[in-house]
Length: 107
Image (cartoon, rainbow, N blue to C red; front, top):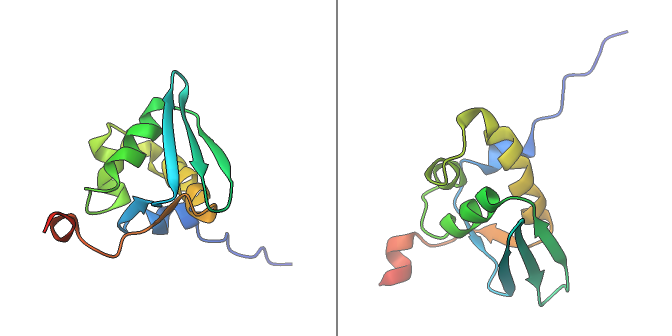
């Protein structure tokens, strides 16, 4: 009996794309990380670390989620963990793919 290959990690694919906070989401920093609330779907999520909050805040200006992670001081070995956390936020519609570049946003 053969073992099926492992499923691709959605967090790793996500890291190479540009993301932004959904405009209907409010972020409230807390000592443990942050609370995120989506006013559209009424979803409440917790960011469990300040570093993840730094990543989420950097998404709007970073060319990719990977570069936002690295700018926030994430150890490259921890990128899969942060990728999965961001994939969870994307699944909850708390972050979404960015359709414009940061330069276009300021124009």
